[in-house]
Image (cartoon, rainbow, N blue to C red):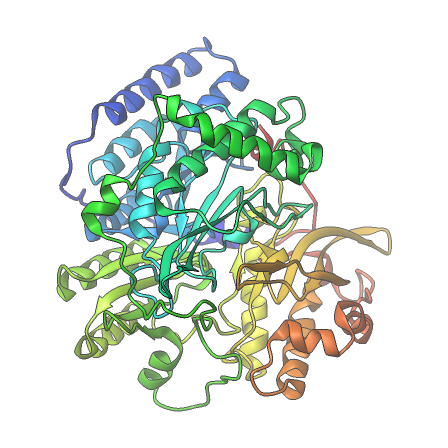
Length: 608
């Protein structure tokens, strides 16, 4: 039995939160249609393939356990969550799932083992507090991501929050985004630090300043396109130097339009926007996007001009927003927390202060992105107690951040997070390991990536290295990079190994991935390792980095001057040795499993 399955327990009695919104007509129609299509499917009137496409477009994803076990993916545009929504997620976790939810690297919340027959109930409950699963899966425009510190970042050029909201509203139910050749992902960042990770998406938007003839600066955007991860990562490419605010949404719409016209509809494995760039060439793809944007004025869906939500909410930055090249946000790479007062250690690592607006933000650490129903309720209670000016967002490193705090509220925030078990100084430190769900629930995964993340965390804690800054560790259970292993300082993806004629869980180590300053570098292969030796390998790399780095030196800079990933891999080669099954039977059992390792994969709904 896997670790996740073992965590199932008797559900507590859950009280449904009161409805706070009246769902709009489109949402009501969506859920009514799901009722109808589900009844037809269960009655044998609808083919599996047809229902699968319908189900995915509504954010409902099959699990490797088969049967009627479903994963429900809830969209949180740019990570924003209100207290009543956190309460509802607690209720969904208890009533329909297994008592907890999972934060994804794309700012969604996933609930597993929801029974198919109960999905319409879940959708109605979510809609009653303004949440939707619509287009969270399938060949659609997916959840709109945004920097979790937007509106509270000391270096942002613009607050991208209302822009991300405008994009979310524009593409939800938009006919353009219902049957694209493949899924389509859009990200926003408020400055070149790129906390929103714009550089590996179909469309990545970064707020930038452009010098004006009068000596001032004009705030606008630089739009990147055709990026992607997966087994063959592609960096996003700049469309043009500067896109004015008035033209941003029209520019964004032009890109999926070109994708819809030209994308590969015969081979899903080569259907993403990144492959279209390979097919047409960068300059031809740019030319078609500019042409589409020029004539988009004639379209009924033309979104030109400043969106009303931006005018209503404003997009003034929280920081100084005067520097062309901002200083990166986050824990300094030279930081290594020492022993001391837990409250002080938490503030050093998990609190970010703004400038122009005097903002204070505090990160709640959620190991592996798992949040229990009790934690959801506690977070909602904390948010309410802090007043209406405090907002919560989930991050792309699977944590949550409280924004809009006052300095004198930090003690209360820390105390409540400590009571919830979420006060560990984990944000941006080595212990903040990111992992996909892996073989617990995913049909494509071949390893238990979550179990490995726990083991790496244990190894780092025992070695006294968990508090090291400037190290990002990401894990995927297969090559598809849902854990974004390509972009991490230290990345791993799962792979079946054979030793002494027996299958065993293994990982490929990559080193030197980086996203920031409107640049991206993908990690290079170092070596392959038995799963049970990955923790030791991680400790040795982090230990060497700490001992050899110069003041302020990033991991990729240190890696470059020490010979690169291949040189580090050679130094770790002694770990790629397999004892016999008789000597070490644990090497042939994956983390959290009780029986011999088997690389079982099923039909991928990622590719349907």
